[in-house]
Image (cartoon, rainbow over all chains, first blue to last red; front, side, top):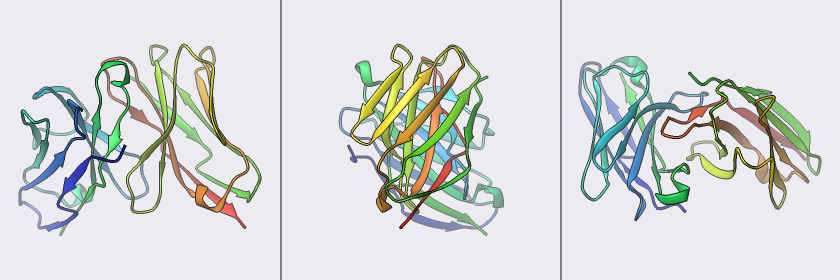
Length: 114
Length: 111
């Protein structure tokens, strides 16, 4: 299953700017999770949305915020960008029912903060 | 909270040999244990998973074992091939909580 899409593919911003990343979930998946993956590290959980409500949050500051829309697509917003925000941002969607634990990832957005 | 440790960080095996990657977790309530493969510059892909009510699961050349008592689980790849070269991540999750990831193992298949 490879139906999760993300945009843009790459993005370059400067410190202090704001950025919005987008994710389109796989059809029928009502849960989306966002991760930050720094180079050479595993993904770090940012937050999860289920039916348009935040359903869990990792250890990230409030300047990381999100939205989920009625069609289950999602946005990740980061304000006041810092150099350390440079990373690959991944979203993952999950099917419901007995497969609610499974996560299927999009290709990611590579964010570079200068 | 949950903590997942993964070993080794790098594993180099001869093509055709077996590879084993091990993970331990701390939260005894964790009940879902997936393994992801991530090739350079690509998305993580779910390759196999196991739930806490099962001790072993196999899919062709890949198998995962779970020891709930010891709180560890392992990925076994047999008859390794060059296309198995990638970074492998283990993860653990309890119901309604986030997925906690290991630090990853870089698997190198030597021709």
